[in-house]
Image (cartoon, rainbow, N blue to C red):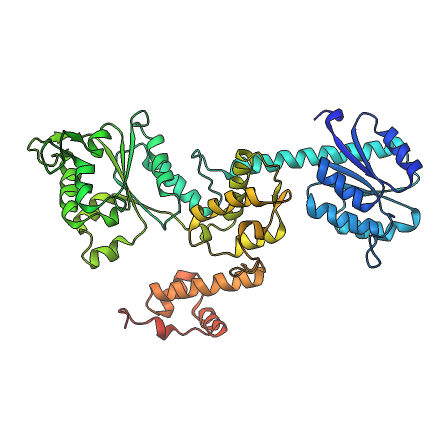
Length: 460
């Protein structure tokens, strides 16, 4: 970045010193302020990368030192800004406190212009390197599948499966809650496949009335039923050579499932009212937000059809389970909609971050996208708040980052899983956990667990 494009804010209540500082940085884009309020106003207006601030600013109120208060507000609004504190000899202890609170550096008065320029130049260089590092980190966090953000282990595993499965013609079933991005992943399968130059045809089995779905899928001949005034080609034929995406296949009526099974086995169709078999070369991707095994038990889905549509099954984790990927995806969507709305939004406020991490997101990514879209429009400042998102900071339970609590939670879970798999057998469970039997007994006492409660092979 050229020096003349570097924005520097100088905050000094001594007008004579302020003028001297301005002359030191003749080649910079310099903005000035004489007190904390003016400094914050200039910070909001110009977003400087570096701030040169007098520590001895007049107090903002009776309770708060002016210099430290201005520093705290600066870092709250622009946490990546490099703040260099200018101090008198007697202020070194306070200066160290300022650095502990987030100031980049401090320099004693009277200043040597050459040394001060060197310190400011270094601050700009560090700021630019950190910005580039964040940019590269965000690029790495985005999955290799265009349009899909995958920073959590669960979503990265999904993307790796998509990349492996895409070049094949295997019928794939995407399982995930509503709003988790099943169609987006289905399109990624198509885009990475040899069929990418052909059509991607999607149909929602839950959105079309039962009496029309067969015609919509297979087409019909003229006169096949009342209102069939001409021959109509179905979605399966239209997708010939490409990919057919059957969304919410769990809602497909039972009578139609038999015809779908024959198509998947033989790769031929018959239009409604027709007698001619029509061969179709199509890759089939299915999705549902229901549990297929439950549907089979309830007699709502054919078991043989399930095995046909699930040659490969990909489980998509809900948004709430995507760990650190939640915030990365939220920031990506915020940038997207801020650009679309031409709004100068810098990010999420602290309370918004806490609310995003705590909320359970029953509507998954679709709900997140809708809330962010509205928040970009409603936000008054440059930071989106929890109120803009329509969330409260206390919504849900904030995940603990205390390492002891995290370790204990993971340890307890591993023990319970091992006991479940081994039906409460201590020897097998300890072997699975990689510990001795006495150690396992100690851990059972620690967490108040009993191996006997896991000994039943059939649930009561």
